[in-house]
Length: 294
Ligand code: OGA
Ligand code: MN
Image (cartoon, rainbow, N blue to C red):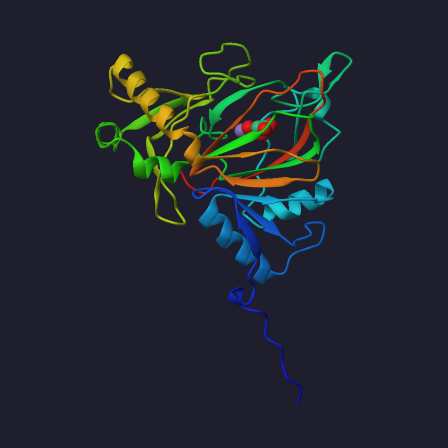
């Protein structure tokens, strides 16, 4: 009789990792994402991600297929938000569901989305009914400085929000819109589709950890349901100013080969400015939303 070897239980794997901020962000060491990960490692990685919201992997050398395989460990791979009609030269260059984020121009046209400069804090796809739960960026070319991606913990901001502001927004829904290409609040450039609007609770309960997080952002949140526009704007601004405080934020300084995955349910992110004459190229993938936010 031969012994049957049982698969390793998730507890059997402890990932080596370093926290990057008390509230958000952890670097995972020792994983090579060009290789498939075993179930116990995947379980440990997912657990760490749910706990820390943002995971960073450095020095990765992976293909687009390998990026999508990694993305699939976190759920169903989601469709890219920008259609090939908006960024035509993306078509044929990347696998379906991989998006280029880039300022590189060929024949005067950008090859990717969100090309230039600074971007306000936002939750990806919050303007839709079931926003993506996660996004992944993998750096291929980076400028010499700037173009950092900054992640703010929605849990930390919720837990410390002024109780008066919190009670006025608790139970309320907030409207969101997005014009593709918009990078700053109120900027009217970019293309707009009437379907790109939504209403979601001001504070979102995370389906997997049960904690609440602020779920409004400077880029896309435009008003509070049933509230006078001025009063709503003042309250939203108070939340933005609080939630963007540096103590709740981890800013990632990119190197080529860095891969970052973030949870869009309990964090928002922004980008710092960078020199327009230097190339920046990221591959991006996303994980489909499973729930309407509640
Ligand atoms: C995104 C995004 C920021 C960046 O891809 O959703 O916000 O740093 N990118 O390019
Ligand atoms: Mn984004």
